[in-house]
Every structure is written in structure tokens, then in C-alpha cells.
Length: 598
Image (cartoon, rainbow, N blue to C red; front, side, top):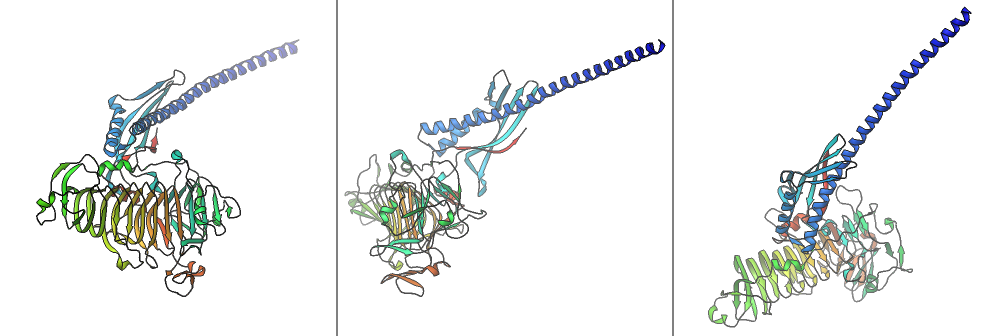
């Protein structure tokens, strides 16, 4: 009995110990669970409050960008001054100190409150001391609250417009605009022969290449050459190719016009390929990248109001073709006109002035300018010819008809061309023909008609800072560049940009051209070889006609292209320096996040 009683006592004791132990463990586990739940709630609140603060940033930046975009679209573009005023007023509206915060509370996860804490200026990329008034660096503050957790997110974001259009960001770019229907070959880039491009490509359509250059020399001629060359910009491994459709190689001779007018490329004449090594020479071929198409209109005709004068000093003579020579009116706005009654007031002098108002555009003869001339602003109703002229238009030249630059000579001998130096922004209502000119330019041209550049040499005007001037052309009509620096070893050095709302065609077979800037159009056709061209036989030459000799295929492998397009990193700055005082802003750039911290 005593032993049994003792065992029962031990069992009871053990049971009590186990119960106590499990009770302690249970309480501990319950405490841990409760603590874990509490920590999970805190952690969830922290995550939700941070997420809410980010939503506040996203919403306020989207709302500001939407307001800017809507205002631009309602007005079909804003002048630089008006956009700057809009940007400043919109930003000021959402400052924390103005009580313009954006808040949201859904009652479930929490709330946010976002506003602008600080606004700082931005500066031009290549001029760190020059403010870019079209953009602001904004510090946004967003408070996200969930439960007992509050997170404050500070984010620095750049908002505003670029000082130059998207078009100027590529060495070569083609564009599709289907608002007026798809034209023949629209969006396509044709690279025939040894064209050399340094920089990136944007091709909304197809890219087609061939190892033959094309020229019309007493008939259509496909001249043996190399495939085009793609050179990456400094600091890049490969050039980038934004390609909208497909890539092809032309494999046989074909009719030139029918070839470049195509929208589809089928049959044995074309070989479709995705390997860029089949389309370009050298090891560094372009790398295809994906990007949504960006339409960045230039708004050429919107610029007219900045050039056309409706009042000013009248420059008049009594002859039908008014000569303008050696006139210095650097602070005046001049409107030359033909009027019979000025014969009495001229009295042997070249000019007389009458103050009148002009509210309509009427034909008023044509005008010829030579010698050294300086004007603040100059506006003609009729056409204008520039021959043997050094002319500067500080605030701009408006030509109500066609603009002829050069003496129209059609020889290859540059000694027979007119020496012309031209400086300033220009708007031309008609066509532009640069022919028979040794042109030195620092010019921005807006053209409603077509542009032809032929039988000329084109170089930049030497500027006071030691740099070379530019030739930037924005044309609603087609641009054709041919027969320039023909058979010369040294190319025309053009620093600038050529843009057409239609077609752009450039020849570098007999011609020799180096464009430092870029080109853009609905359709681009580039024809070139590498090496020498001459009207006389030389060692290693290929004979086409009795006076047309070109570098043979072997020699081309070690020589430079006769058509080089080199993207200019400073082209946007150059455009900004040349543009008229009130460019039109059409597009707001997406917000650019620079820094973010909790």
C-alpha cells in the first residue's frame, strides 16, 4: 500500500508539472502570436503608408503634366513665353505653402497628401550656367498614412518641355504620319552603297540597304560599292536602331523610282533579314531597340508670324527688280517694296523711307541682294535672290516668294560660283534653291515649299567663339541635295540638320558631303560610294562614262565615304541658339525622376 500510494503521488506530481509546463508554453505561444500579429499590423501599415506616399507623388506629377498637355493641345501649341508662364503658374498652384496639395482617403488602407515643397531651376546640358526656363526641378512631398504609420516621401522630378523636338535626337530618322494617308515609301530608310552614319537611327517603316550606290549619269547607274557603315556615338558600344517594321537587302539592279516608292518588298529582288551584319559593313552594326513611336511636330507654318512684318521702314526704288546692296540697318525693321512714286523722292539716292501699314500680302516684284548688308529684321512680299552677298538678319528674314541663293551656275567648277555668307533665321513662303553658291552659313530656315541644294559648296560661317556656323532646314516640301563638291577630295562641311515633312534625298557619289548634325523626313534615300571621284581616269578607278570615274571596290575598303552623317551632340544647343525669339512648344516631356528618399 505504501508503495502504491507513493506511485499515485508521483503520478499526480508529474501531471501537475506537465500541466504547468504546457500552460507556460501556451501562454508564451499566445504572447508570441499576439506580438507577431501586432508586428504584422505595424509592418503592413508601414508598407501601406509608403505605398500611399508613392501614389501621391504619381498622382500629382500626372495631374501637372496632364494640365500642361491639355493647355498645349487646346491652343495647338504655345509660344515659349506662354509655356513658361503656364509652367510657373501651374507649379505655384500646387505648392505646399499655397495650400494646393492633392489629398485622397479611401477609408480602408489609409490616406495621402502630396504637394510641392521646393522648385529649382534647370540648366542647359552644355551650358551649366544658362537656365533652361522650359523645365523645372521640383521636390515633391507626399505624406502617406495607414493606421499609426506615417511615411513622408521626398522626390525630385524634372517637369516641362524640351528646348528642341524629338526629331533632333537621332543622326537619321524617318517618320510615319498617317493623318493624310500613307504615301509611297513612307517611313522607309534606303541606304545605297557606302554611306557612313555615326549615331543612332529611328526608322518608323522599313530599312533597305545595298552594296551599290546609285547615280544618274546619262542614264540610271548602280555603281559597285560597300554596304553602309554604322558607327556608334562616342561612349557607346553600338549604334541604336529603333525599327518600326522590317529590314531588307536589295540584291539586284532595279528601277530606282519604282524601288524607292515601294511599301512592300517581296520577290527575289529583296532579301528579308533580321541579322544586321547582312545589312551593314564592319563589326559594329546597329543594335535594334524597342521604343514607342514619338510624333514631335515642328510646326513650320506656325513660325510665320515671328517673321512677317506688317509695319516698318519701307525700302523702295523705282525699278521692278529692286537691288539691295551695302545697306546697314542693323536696328531697323525693313520692308522693301516696288512703288512708282518713289522715283521722285529717290533723286539719285538708292533708298528712301516711307512709313505705311501692310495688312495683306500682295505681289511686289522681286528683290536682289548683294554686297554687305546688316538688318535687324527684313520682310519681302516677293522673291529674293542673294548673289555675292554677306548678309545678316539679326531677328530674321521673311521671303514672301522664292529664295534663290547663288548664281544658278550648273558647272562643277566652284570658281564659277557666287561667294555668299548668310547669318540669321529665315522663313520662306515658296521654294529655296541653293545653286551656284560657295555658301558659308549660320542659318535656320523654315520653308513652306521645296528645297534644292546643288552645284554648290556648303560650309559653316566662322563665328566669334571659334566655332563654325550651321545650316538647319525645316521644310514642308521635299529636300534634295546633289552635285555638291563634285569630284573634290574635301567634302562640304555642313554643321546642321535637315528635316522634311516629305522626302529627303542625298547623293554622295560624285558629290562629297559631311553633315555634322542629322537628317529626318518621311522617307530618306541616301546614295554614296567611298573614296575618290573624278572626270579623269586614275589608278584603281571604275569607269562609268567617258568623264565619270569612281573608286573601285578594293580602294573603297580603305577610304572614307563621300556621304558622311555624324550626329552632333551639340545640335540641340545649336538649334536653341539659332531659333527665333518665340518658338512653339507642342509637347510636354514625361516627368524625369532624379532622386527619391523616405
